[in-house]
Length: 85
Figure: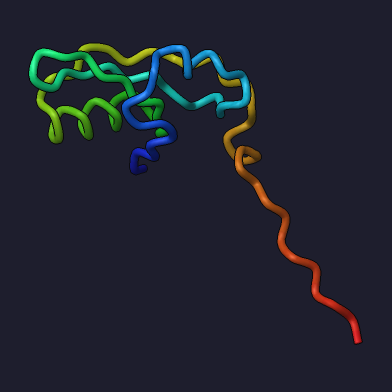
């Protein structure tokens, strides 16, 4: 599974949003001695670690967010109903 970045370069308080999916994580990583944060969605921490390790080389932490939404229902939009003639 790939990594879906929900919030890039955000404040760590973004992870306290309960409207995030349950399989979302707060990732901290370093760029030029600065710590940056992303909220991401992925199947496992292993996928996230590999993605950030390959991209930035400095993974500082991966934590769960406080999301409570079922991942299948997060950002779900029902299909449009066809108009009858």
